[in-house]
Structures are given as C-alpha cells and as structure tokens.
Amino acid sequence: MTSDDRSWTAEAPAESLTGNVEASTLVLRLGIAVNAVRAAQRFYLAVADADGPGGERDRFWAFLIASGFLNEALQVIRPKFPAVRALAESGGATEDQVHAVGELLSGRRPINQTLDRLRNQLAFHWDEGLVKEFVSNYSKPTVVWADGAGRSNGEMLYRASAAAVANLVLPPIENGERETDEQVRDRMKQLLVQLTEATAAVVALCERAIIGHLSDIGVSITPKAG
Image (cartoon, one colour):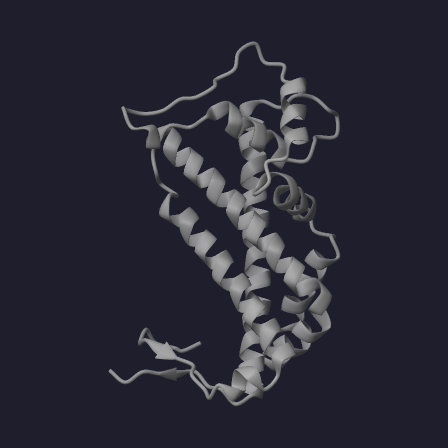
C-alpha cells in the first residue's frame, strides 16, 4: 500500500466503521480472510526447510491450514461477490483478477474439489468415514505407525495418520491403480502450486476490495513520521 518500508497506519473517525454496518462488516470479513491466509503462508515458510519427520509434519499441516483458510475466504466472498467485485474494481482490480476468483467461485479450477474436501472433512474435522476408507483400502505389506528424530516427541510424526490424510487430499487417479510414493509427492507438489495460485488470486481481490472501500469513504494510507 506504500512504496517504502516505513511503518504506516490507516486511521479514521469511528463513523467510518459504524456509518454503514453492512459494508463495514463485509470489508472486515475480507480483512479476516487476508490475515488468516497470510498467517498460514508464513507458518509454511517458517518450516519450509525444517529437517526430519517433524519438519515434514509441520509443512503438511501448514498446507492443510492454508487450504482450509482459503476455502473459508471463498465462502465469505461467494454470496457477496457482486459487492466484492464492485469494491475491488473501485480499488483498481483488473479484469483478470476478478475473473480468476470468479473461476474459483464457480468450481471450475482443479483445486476446488480438494478445497471442499479438506475444509469439510479433513483439515479441521478429521472425518471418521474418510479415515476408515483409508484403513479399509490399505494394501501395502507393512505400515509405519510413527517415526522421529532424537528424543523429543516434538520431532515425531505419526506417519500412518499423516498418510491417511495425504491419501485423501488427492483426488483418485482415473485408472484406480495404486500410486507410488514418488507419484504421490509429485501430485502434492502440483497441488501446492495450485493452492499458491488460488491464494494469490483471492488475496489480491480481497485487498483491492478493501482499498476500494477505504478510498470510497475517504480513508487514506498514511506513512508515520520517522
């Protein structure tokens, strides 16, 4: 919002918040969405290079949290999309930025199926039926229940539990054949790229909408002195 690295604030009389309850409520929810998604991104970056099973665990669950928050952001935008779009365009959103989020809202992006499944059944709820499905269909000769590094429980991964979630994160392959571990990792990498692109699109539109609203009510971003 500013071109330098000075601290800044956007402050206005309380009337700018309370004068239009509906508009303010929408913009605050968009801000919650951006805050949550950005925090999840930072969680992931903080453990991006962490070693061992604990690092693997932290990266995977940071991915799940980011996916869940992104889906929540879409739930905020969906019923209010015309209003969000108008505010975003007022804030300088491009046609491509609006279109990208519109595609996500319509369910036409590859990641949509995964987002719905993660948010509703895995990321926060750990649905019993889906875990039971993993157990019932397990076909490997052995199972790794847990592994770790050193004496700290904080560096331990309950690997079978992580495998249950990872197996269900990815949509089934068309021929129904069991994938190798390398194939699963490759598909997870593709999914991470899709998540990154979808997150960038949603955050960009939300921020443009917030900027548009603030501009409409006469609130400016002012760098602090010093």
